Image (tube, rainbow, N blue to C red; front, side):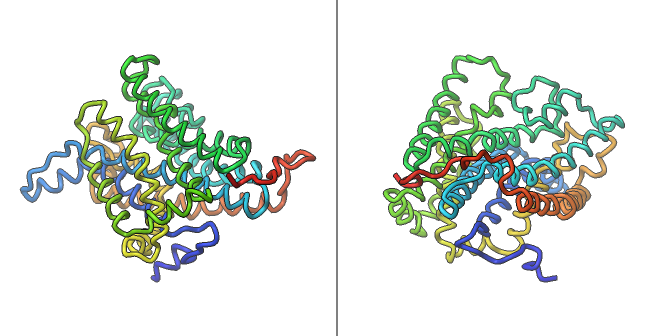
Length: 392
């Protein structure tokens, strides 16, 4: 089978499809899976007499999540800017319809499956934890923790960003004001993270603390900032001149690779490195996008990675059920939580979710917009871009 047929159109640099970003999504989900499958990987290596200790490698998955965050900030802001440039305004109605049909159907499909497993006693998940995941409030919920819904903290962070940023984008108006706000807020979140952690101002548990939106959203905001800087007449040529250098791309990627294995360090250094990673991720994404003819971008745009990238959301949902650390496995699913059966299970569930749930839902969302393109719009446009909006 020609894999290029599975991943859709090749490239549209002037449109919204960016195949390089599919490659980044693939890298992100592979890091998440690697972290969650580390116990399996270590057991497999020990069969061949290879001494293996998962150690800090268990936690490489968080770096995959941070890549997802940087991608979200960069891509959502880029799309808002493109819509504004093409149509003179953006439609909040259209944005939220697209997001709703993109995210909710696949999420509800997964939560329904997990809920059924909980009702039958296979999984131990409290009603509070399930409801907080459904309502994208898992990163602030105090309900009993469950591994099988543990990844919903990151989905909550992204949903909170989707709910707030488009309206702020409209309100702030011009690119330079938006850029100043994004950078200022990202820095403020980093400072707040350190102050709250040191003085325990909110009293959150360690697990909840590192998943809260007010602690993590700076990683999305740096993606926002890079997209806005690329739209600013002053910063755009400087940013592109810097990132067009292949040596800079290599340096950014090497720096990110080095951060994968830095875990057991002093909290102050850890927080500094977190902020650095928040900046480096969208810069690296932008650099590979600019250098789309380079070897790194060509690698990211290979059909296999693009396919994994397109499946990444469904893979992210379902991997939590089958790629499980040893102490979180349950008897009712354990055969499907060991290699190679977990790989088959995840790929099967993700494929069903993508082709039978995600893609039809996205198509339905497009039909809704075609049928009711201005539904909910007031007699005046949501916000017509004033003269000079979109410019500094």
